[in-house]
Length: 556
Image (cartoon, rainbow, N blue to C red; front, side, top):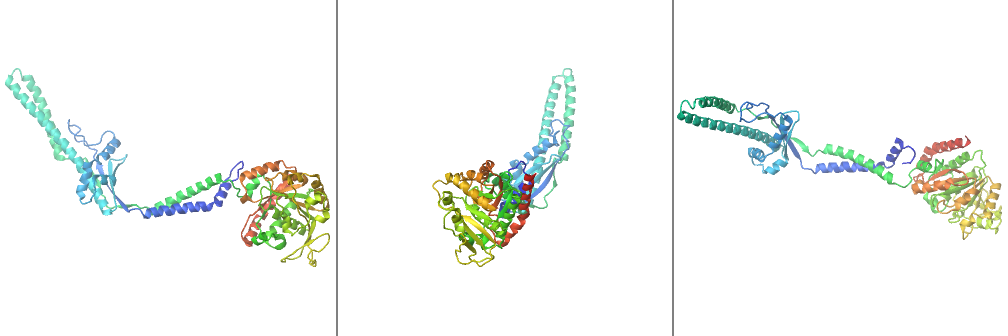
């Protein structure tokens, strides 16, 4: 994303569109993994039965009798009973009721559960098994085993209470017999107390016997399991979950990679990182056959979509230099292999075809290539600047013919005919000044007075002087040459640049002595001619609007 003062939703969407295949792949892989995992899972079925805990307390009024209902904290009581249902006696009772399952107590506990509801007095007994019928039988047996266990506990407590009352009655009988033998007067008060206690114990005994006879249900099966539901695998659910997780993970990976990415992705980012520099044009890479043979698309295929991109660049430069005396334009780039020399050579031909007098100067003394584009082998700039060769002898005039041909350029020296064929109608003339022999110290040479005088002479005799300068960040020649140019144009291939490279280039341009007219994006589309033409048409209005906005700002 472009680091600006405010990141907008459009910036995020652009990042997602650029790396959309990463999101698609993550979503697809996780979805397929989730579905594959589900298909390899064992099929499991779950059945459940409900048990109602009685809220009645028939023994509350009987001392020593068990409490059959719930306590004053129903939620705590139901949770306690859920734990009681997990004791080995209850589990073994459920297994005994079904029989032949082959499950141990530990196995059954692992495949079953008992849950309580905080808003009701109901326990839910759930059992999971690969066999749906077995799961149903085990769930019902588990609920019945718990209910029987609770009834047995209740009955045992009643029996213990009755035994306690019987024992107390026997002790009273023995006490009464002893008092009678001791004498009438001495045991009268004791006998009266004995009678009252005996009456109370008899009442309690009768109550307990009544409760034993009634046998109230402290835990009864409310709902039996009538089927088993498939709980595993959930293929559709897992697939949908995998899709959602994949999308989220894909987006996270996209933005993580974007935050760690150092390469420049778009021309908009180049413009933003160079201080809002206007985009002058988008240039596709020339066809491979032209690159291999060092030929120019403006000479070999002037009617192609690639050639139209250079005409558009020429028109934008005309807009940028409107009402300004800009004749000497220096073309440079941050690094090598960004298409700088190819761009300046084709642009020179485009200006010449527009009827302007153009001189193309090769000042990239570290890596001169313009001579190969025009098949030149004579003297060059360094010899002229040192006074060894006259300017007229070093300049080579290139005659541009009227139609494409296998060899459609004519090189003329001082009016002479190199290949003996000048019968075609000439559409434009271009003077090329190659670099000549490379000096031992190019950095010192570009600061020499002789070069300054030469560039000034060229500026006075033509309409446009295009200077092919070396890479701005590799050597210091650009800083020295900037004072000899009227304007600077940056050639940038976004896919080959790093963000830190643009930061360094921006610092260098900030101290340049002449204005930077804009930048040209190269390598924008490497597809076929139709795709390139579509790209140019789609971006034409953007380039012109950018240039016009820059012009309005400068004139304001």
